[in-house]
Length: 106
Ligand SMILES: [Zn+2]
Figure 1: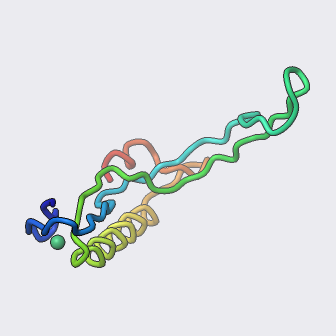
Figure 2 (figure 1 turned 135 degrees about the vertical axis):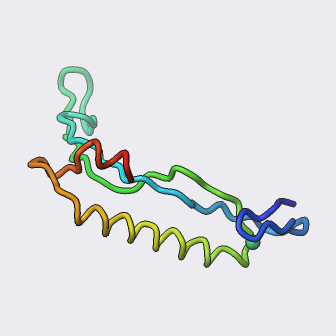
């Protein structure tokens, strides 16, 4: 038994709860040289580079009922689309990263 975060209704017992990401923030990871061991032992070990990348990091999750699940997912997708639209308009530095001051304002 739990209370839905969206419709605020107490859900009956033995009903499945869904955890849905409600807030995300953009996250980028730098490239790391020789980050992952792939083969061998000791000095003979072979290390592979981690290419890094960018994506989304969940910052808030909420428990919602099955009725509100599609709405919660649609809200998150529209939120991500909105953030991507504002990021596309903002200036990008030479490394392809959004400046630090811009990231905190998102
Ligand atoms: Zn609900």
